[in-house]
Image (cartoon, rainbow, N blue to C red; front, side):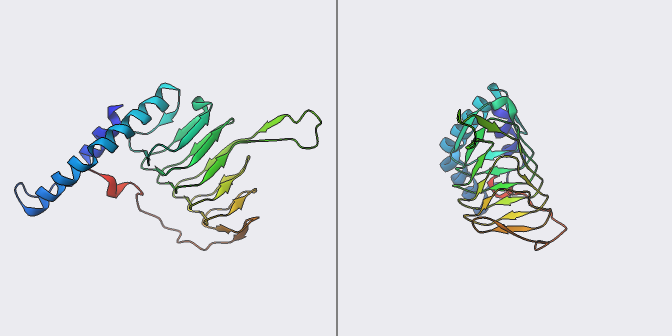
Length: 192
């Protein structure tokens, strides 16, 4: 539960004691304390359910994660907004990933050709530095490549190559639109 808070504390701003920036940082810390405690509690519940989470993963306002938590993992310094994650098959989120509010990652659907309508679950992999924008939907069996971007509202039913941009419904792939050298952290500005 406290590994997230410990990580935020270790990466905090450290302005000179007594300076205006120091006072501003402490006011901000006091304002954020309730939300951070809620975040730590949510993180602890996921970990208790078997999810494999790096201490620096950040969930914005909890979101909705349902299914088999033991099949969910998220790498370091990834940001997951108020997204819906349906974990019925492995859902692997890499490091430095940004998943915005309203996104849906669905690892299961149904076989509409079968009269018994059985569930079909297939894994989803989101590789390092990928960005899944607001209200995008990722369907079962999809891999989002390293540094790929899924545009707002896109519905992705097939793999998105590294560095490509997927947009539209159904998503169309535009090859190699993104910078190839990526070095940022979606959670860096969240430090205490």
